[in-house]
Length: 157
Image (cartoon, rainbow, N blue to C red; front, side, top):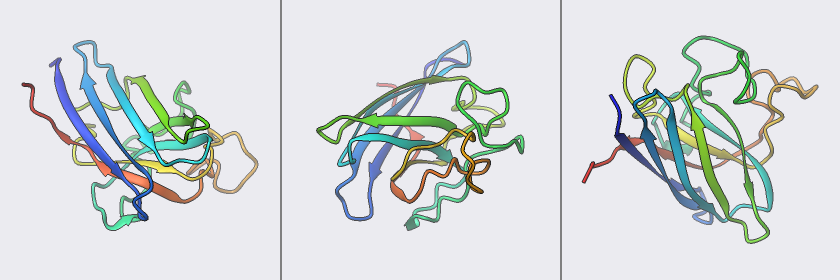
């Protein structure tokens, strides 16, 4: 099923982090993620799909990384990774990160759909499971959740 579209509006707890992301599932199973996030400190920021679309307690209620196959945290190009491990987005000196990711592990349809889940931007870089920190294999030690948005269906018109 190609052409399925979704959108997530990113907001932060202090309203400085903002953005929107567009998701497009292609017929080959790859999902494109495109958009911009502003209000970030320059440099890399962990970027993940989290299991829950619950923002009742801001980004803290979005649960752990989306991990339906119960794997260790890793880089987007690793065979062993959470489905929601999308690595880092890089903010320029203007605090804006241009997001352009293509990934086959985040479908918008089927058993492991990311619809209704949340996308989260973290304060710190994701070490991609390669750090020596105790959180490397679960969260990439990416720090606080500074922005998030629920992934919802978007009109095809």
